[in-house]
Amino acid sequence: MPITSFQGIFSKAKQMGRKRLAVAGADGEEILEAVRNAYEEGVIQPILIGNKSRIQLLASRRRIDISPFELVEAKDPLNSCQKAVELVQGGRADILMKGGVGTAVLLKVVLDKESGLRKGKLLSHVVVMEAKAYPKLMIVTDGGMNISPDLQTKVELIKNALWVAHKLEIKLPKVALLAAVETVNPDMQETIDAAILAKMAQRGQLGNLIADGPVAFDLAISSQAAEIKGVESPIAGEADILLVPDIATGNIMVKALIWLGEVEVGGIVVGAKIPIVLLSRSDTAKIKLNSIALGAIICEEGG
Image 1 (spheres, rainbow, N blue to C red):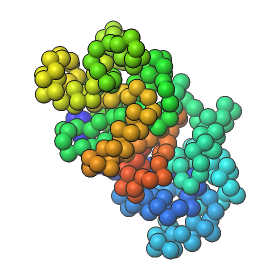
Image 2 (image 1 turned 90 degrees about the vertical axis):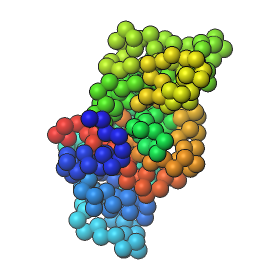
Image 3 (image 1 turned 90 degrees about the horizontal axis):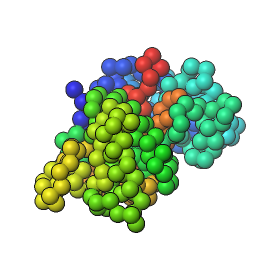
């Protein structure tokens, strides 16, 4: 059965056993709180990388017991990222988490051709959302990494999201190729891309999924909206994966739902050798916790 909630994600993560989480730049109170919570949930075994004395000071200030956690000294943010990646390469960590280091610094180390963690053709950001008004989880990509994806990039975004969907035990994901309208408009490149992707999916070029587009967001999540618009679509009201046209659309949509729609959210970067928990500075401790649990269930078997 497909996983339909974050409660289900946590249940699966616990069943899989603790995954080893390397935190690059762990000297942050919110970071330590999220890691502590994930540890107490039985999801991860943390490795905290950074300035040991500062990490210990912040943990003491928040009354967070870090005695069960391994601490690794690092002299600066770049060194923290390098040591975290080394732990992954050495088989000592299953998940990588961005702590108090710059995203650009972390990704530079992750994408290094000699010692990095690149695995697939593309790294992409995937958000999983649980909304009270929708009966299953929604997977949104990409609102965090790929700015203005072309057609081939969108193919890789779908493949990365499909991998996450399968980890959520969704056997035949339904993919909504989002646009502002349901008709192909030569002046709107996203509608052209969506039509091509839909045909590729129909011919089995994108993997084991059903895709349709261009479709607007309301049609993707509501069969009633499709009926009112007079649009027949195999994914209407049943979308598992939402492919957004660009990073701005995805970022704005997800943040609007977080702040106004009371949705549960977790986000990760996929396409590397291991999941990467890459968070926004405004993300709550709960979003951080959800993201860690999501990363734990999509680790490779035996990772």
